[in-house]
Amino acid sequence: MEQALQVFITVVEQKNFTKAAEILHMTQPAVSSYIQNLERALNIKLLERTNKFVRLNKAGEIVYQHAKDIAGLYTRMENLLDDLKHSASGTLSIGSSYTYGEYILPYKIANLLKSYPQLNPNVIIRNSNEIIELVMRNQIDVGIIEGEFKNEKVKITPFANDQLSITTASNHYFLSTQKISSHDLSEETWLIREEGSGTREMQEKFFNRMGCYPKKMMVLGSTQAIKESIEAGLGISFLSHSVIKNEVELGKLKLLEIDEYSIIRNFSLVTPIFQFQTKATEVFVQLLTNEPII
Image 1: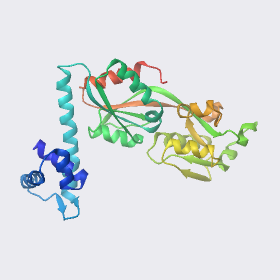
Image 2 (image 1 turned 45 degrees about the horizontal axis):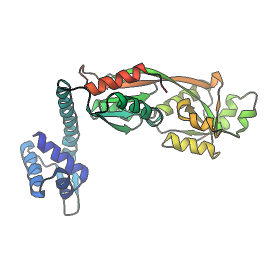
Image 3 (image 1 turned 30 degrees about the horizontal axis):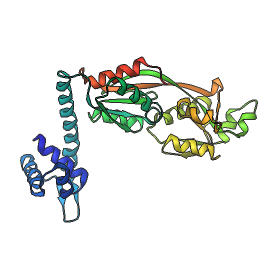
Image 4 (image 1 turned 90 degrees about the horizontal axis):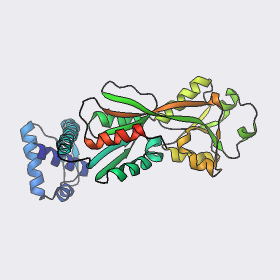
């Protein structure tokens, strides 16, 4: 059954029997046989097939989601058993939210590989809600999120702090203004992240705290896009000090380091509820909790 599920997952993700056969190093008839046997065992059709495409029906969607969960658990079991025989090695699946994943995590992984060169980190960058979901579905070993999230189906452990402040272009008039009011802030165009982002959560919290909900907002799908847009003069934003360090040093962006206009948030680890962790996950978590953020 395990092999049949793997074949099924590959067919679904490739949307093609021939491509799936190439990836699995099988013949196309062998792939078709696995799918037919799986449908026979479950007593239900899973795929709609024509000469041009393969797509899931409703039953197939259910089986695909559970097959991904089973595959994740099976891989985890293999890694745990391998840990009994070896030191930390093999694949470490890490999911991270954008701020930490794009600006801090690469340096942490570099330090990790100095001590454990046999590790093979695979990194997925998503927003915080999606990272929690991936941990819940056993599709990553460990997640890193930003902001305040609660979920009883996973373990969320804060391990570092991050400061966020208003960020402007280097020639913005706020920089020469002695007193900036909430009205001034509400009149600006604010560049914000999408729903589900940890940074978006902090931006919303800031607006509510200051009573300065913007009249005009522009939603952008990445922090890099926001930084470029600020520099281009499209608006201002509320960003982590971690992500604009280089731009501030080069004079491209400016921080309004005003205490009342700053917020401290958590970076948190997201791990499964169950007790056992792979050796690779253990050493990675230990690294994050023992080292300074930068």
